[in-house]
Each structure stands twice: as C-alpha cells, then as structure tokens.
Length: 334
Image (cartoon, rainbow, N blue to C red; front, side, top):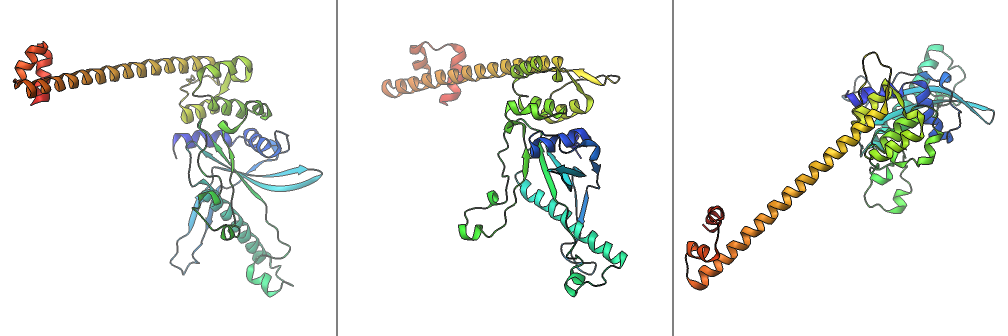
C-alpha cells in the first residue's frame, strides 16, 4: 500500500468525513447520514467463482478501502445501507469493472451469510426445494451496497464511468440487453465552486484545495474568503501532500498548520518553474537560431563551391567566415 493509499484511507475512515461525502453526493448536503450511526465493516471480500474445494479454481479476495454500515432515515422510513468508498489518486481506466466486482462480491457474501445462518439455525422447516437448494429464502432480503469513488486529483476524470462506455461499437439491440453498471464518482474538478458549501467537514477544504492545486492565485483567494482554510489537521495535510504534492510541513508537536505558508511555497515553486521553463525555451530558441544560421552558411558555401569551382576554404574566405564558425562548418561540409 502506497503513501497515497494510507493517507487517503486514514482520512476517509473518519466517520464525519465519510458521512459528509455521502450526504453531499446522495442528499445534496442534507444531513441524513449521521456519523454516530456509522459502523465500520470488514473490508475483505472473498468468493469462489470457479467452484468449491474440489475444483481447480482459486479463490478471489479483494479489499475495499473503507466500508461502513448505516441506518439512514428519510420520509419516516429507515433502511440499512452498506456504504463503501474507493479512493483514487490517479485515474483508473477500468474502475467501473473494479467497482462492479467489489459490489458483486458483497452481494455474494450476503447470500452466503444468509445460507449459513439458515443452516446454523435449522430454520429450513417448511421451505420448498427451491429455497433449500438456493439457501436463500423468499423472505430473505439483501442490503443495498452503495460505492463512491473519490478522486483525489486536480485533473478532470477522463476515464469511463460505466461498463457500456468501455465497449467498442455494438449493435444497439444487443447493447440494450447487456446490463450496464455505472460508478458513482466524486472528483474535485466536477464540483461547481458554489457547491462546496454543501460539505460540512474538512472534506470541503481538501477537495477545494485539490481542485485549484495548480492555481496558486485562486488558492490564495479561497483562503482569504474562507477561514476554514487557515488551519488544516494532520490527516488533511497528509492527503494533500501525498496526492497533489502540496509540500505542507507540520511539526511533531503541532496538530494544525497555517496553510498560508504552504500557498506561498506553492507560488514560489510556480514562479521558479515558470522561470526555468522560460529559460529552457530561450535556450532552445537560441540553439534553433544558431542551427539555422550554420545551415544557411553551409548552403551558401556549397553553392559557391559548385558555381565557382572553389574549395570550401576559398568560399569561407570570400564570405568572411570566422575561425570559430570554420571549425563547425568543416564538420558539416565533410
């Protein structure tokens, strides 16, 4: 597990941040999912897709980033939900397939758990053969699984967000019968600026910072407008440092860090980068101009040699070529 994974998972595991992400994405910022109602779950998923113990197939184990169970209540109805977050510091171009597998493994696990529960309790009495063979009774129900991908990068997500987007050209009639799977994506670049106020935790500052991490001037403006940017905790700083190279330093005894200093550092780095790139462009332009000058001299010398039947040295004498240029031209003309 890389530094980005450790920082992002540690940050998103906090109940208030986890709940904030889903309240924004699902409920537009309404506080439906309460942090105190979240309970963390085992993130390991395992299934045997190719048969049982006697088969040659191997088990498949996948580990989610963060997964919690919650009882959410809307319109006087309560329901248990399984909520999962997958973080990405880079764009994953097969993410819909990866998410679909995670969700399928969770549903398969629920079915297996139901069958195991029935076997242990011996409550198959009265069940028909179909229920007995499937292990899943008519009255059994699955818990919905909602997976949210959070992209901790400043660039726009240019990867597919559904299985159908990953297909090539397909017959529309066939495609209409192929089930699609769309992933839920939360990416800073996709969030309108006036929507960040819907977040209630530091996720607002983290995602806003990431969105404009390549624009130091805009970041300075944000910090002046919102006091929430003035101080960020260690978890938030770790995410920013590992995911967008914010380079924010924090002392051992400090719990928070004034981000104004970090922004100034980013501006200084941006200026240094712009100066370095300008110098490189100037050097390249000078080199190209010099190459063009030498190339033109070579052409003129060759024409004189051809028309006047002169040697290269005689042609260079007539053109008044300097000694330093003669050494270069002799190599070009040889």
